[in-house]
Image 1 (cartoon, helix red, strand yellow):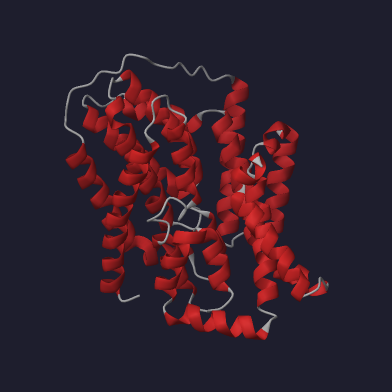
Image 2 (cartoon, one colour):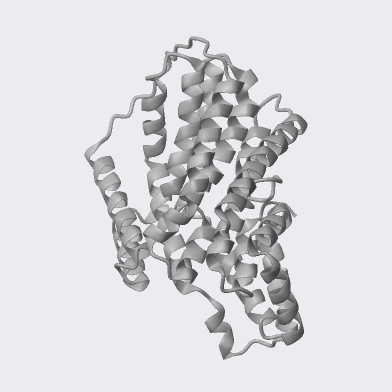
Length: 369
């Protein structure tokens, strides 16, 4: 039961795949359902980010920036911006896993526990919105980018207006919700990097570069995966236990489900008509109930308007707590804090997300996508 609770999306995807297999019995066509390129890039990035986390690279950068601030507002703005900008490269999940616990410690030693909820909520929004600018930012972007055949520049330009507005709105929210009271952070962690640590950091910078080359289609994904796997196996094989392999299996089960549904004419035609009514709107609505990664895989099977799905699933990450799986990560982390008020958190999370979603929808209407 604990596994089901922790991996509800994976379990749901598995059940859907199994049920669809009763309608379309397993055959050689099943192998063609899987997007191996997306899975390979996801695995390369997860291994790389696990390595950086193991070495506390992101946390060290965060501490360095926070200690340059003299006011609590400055500290909070740095925490929010860390999530926003880092999510573009290290994914929204990793950004929140790294910086939410760091934020809790920082606010605690600043004696500003009253800011826990607002800061964590804004960090979550920042990670979800920052991640939408690049294919590396989140799993659905990586999948849809691979499917679309777009150039990296085209993808960034598609999402740039939303990212700029999101950044401005985050800054405004930070200024409004946090007073500029003085603060002094005395506690400090020392990072005495050994030669081995430096070699490991260099190695993961290399594997990240390889991942970027694969994403940019400069390097074939099979070649990139072999290089990353070989280097990590040679120098730091224990890190291979760290990636979230359940995400990969979630993708595989969803690919099987969608592949089977497309081979059932009645269901395929119905879903195609529904999705094509308004790809952006349908993506946003579906994401609120099944989260944006399954929505991206589901809708992509029934429309060729991939850029609209990219916009819709990214905006759809705002709203309910389950609209983006990254949002659940920060919620769980807040829930583990002594004295946490989960009811208040959900209320604040919901109204802040709905505010940002409303603004993003207006931008979408103005952009005419």
